[in-house]
Length: 230
Image (cartoon, rainbow, N blue to C red; front, side, top):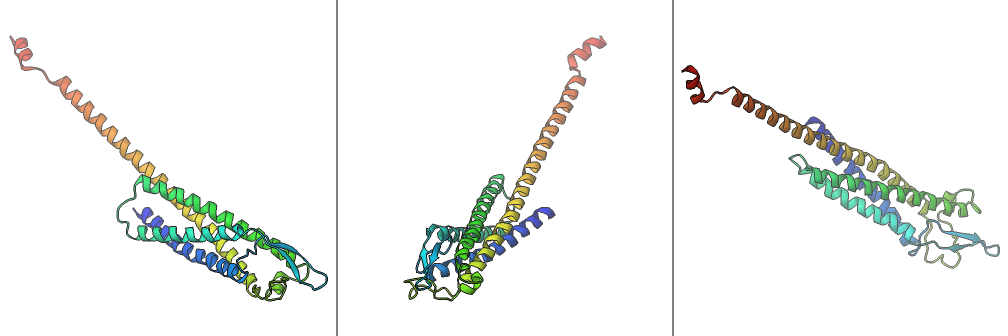
């Protein structure tokens, strides 16, 4: 029981942290999409124009930003529901409930690693273009760099926004690993307890049957006893 309580508290704490990390992904990515007029910065490339020094941008698919956003929303919703469910849990969870927790943990882990890799690699591609003109990617933040869209696009916060999104994504991945491991441990523990209970029940039935068989073998019918005495 003590182990179960520790694991349950660990799950609640993990999901609380995951809620915070999902917001670290959702808010910066949403701000970046809005500041770039609906375009996605991740995996965006281009070339610098010699005549005016502007960046002739080739926008990437918006799906590279939308997937991490959907991942953050998924994490936020699942973690909120799990926190509520765990905080009201009084009895031991069923095997089916624990199995669902494992499946959700695997999905959260998969979405987290995909989003983290997508944000990191996509931002590297963007920064490679920026460092062709600026000494660092951070220096390009706030500069008037995109040809023809300078009135609609605000580049002042992209560096800190993407940095925060990366932190949230990799942090969510790490916490998802922990949550998944705890869910698997609880499932294994539940399975072992069920096997022990079944084994104890079968052993009890065997002992009862053996005792009954001994009683039946030692008992002598009354008629046979009287015949023997005569």
